[in-house]
Image 1 (tube, rainbow, N blue to C red):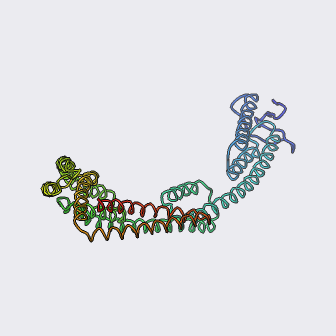
Image 2 (tube, rainbow, N blue to C red):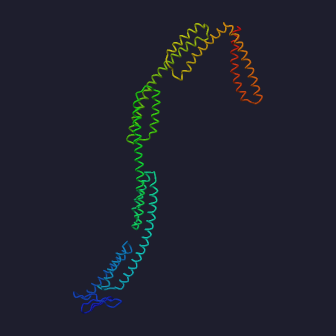
Length: 409
C-alpha cells in the first residue's frame, strides 16, 4: 500500500483521493507500482491546475465572452467532480467558484459598458443625423458633399443600436444624403443648361465678330465690338471645353480687325504729319504778309495760300488748333485792314464810330459807379463780377477810340 497527503493506493490497486467529503475513488491501477499510480494521477491533477490557470488568465486579460468562459468552467468543474486526479481538488473547486464570480462580475461590467457605449452611439448617431439633415440644405456642393461622405465613415465606425432605433436613424441619415444628392444633381443640371444657353449665345457672338473682322468701317465696327464684348460678359460661362475655344475665336476676330485698323491709322498718322509740315510752311508764308502794306496784293496772296491750304488733307488733331490759329491771325489782320480802309473812305462809318464810342464810354462810367457801390456795400463778389465785365467794355472802348482816331487822321 502507498499514500501521499492527497491520495493513496490500496493493495488491490484502487487509487483514492482525499477531499473534504472524505476519500473518493480515482481509478484502478494494475500496470505498475503504487508510486507510479499516484504519480500518474498527480500529473492529471497538474494538468487541471494548468488548464484552470490558463482560463483564469484568459478571463482576466482577454475579451473572452462570458458564455464561452462559463462553458469552459463547467467543463473543468466536471473533470474536478469526476475525481480522476490526485491533488487538492477542493482548492480547484474554490478557484472555479471564484472564477465564476469573476465572470459574472465581468459580465455585469460589460453590460454596463455596452449600455454606456449604446447611449454614446445613439447620441453620436443623433448628432450625425442632425448634421446630415442640415447639410442637405447646403449650397456648398463640394464641401458639404465631402462632409457627408466623411459622416458615412464615422457612422460605420459606431456600434449598432437595437434594430428599430438603428434603422430609424439610418433612414433619416440616408434620406438627408439622398435629398442633398438630388438638389446637387438638379443644380448642376440647371448649370449645364445655363452653360449650354451661354454656348449658343457665344456661338452667335463669335459668328458676328468673325464677320466683322474684315470691316474697314473703323468707328462703327469698333463700337460694335465693344457692344459684343458686353454681351459676351453678360452671357455667362459656357462649358469649359467650349469656353476656351469660343473665346480664342472671338478674341482672334477682334485682333484681326484692330490690327488692320492700327495699320491704317498708322499710315494715316504718317500722312497727317506730312500734311502738318506743308500747312506750317503755308502759315510761314502767310505770316510774312503782316503787317499789311498793300491790301490788294495781300488779299490776293492770302486767297492763293488758302486754296493750297484746302487742297492739303487733315493734320493730327492735337496740332490742328495751333496751325489753323496762325492762318486765322493773318486772315483777321487782312480783315482789319479792309475795315480800316472802309472806315477811312466812308463818312457814315465815322459817325457810327463816334456814336458807338459815346455809348461805350457811358457803359464804362456806369459800371465803375456800380463797382464802387458794391464795394461800399461789402459785396465783393458782385464787384468782382462787374470788374470782369468792365474789362471787356473798356477793351471795346479802347478799340473804338483807336478807330475814331483813325477817322480823325
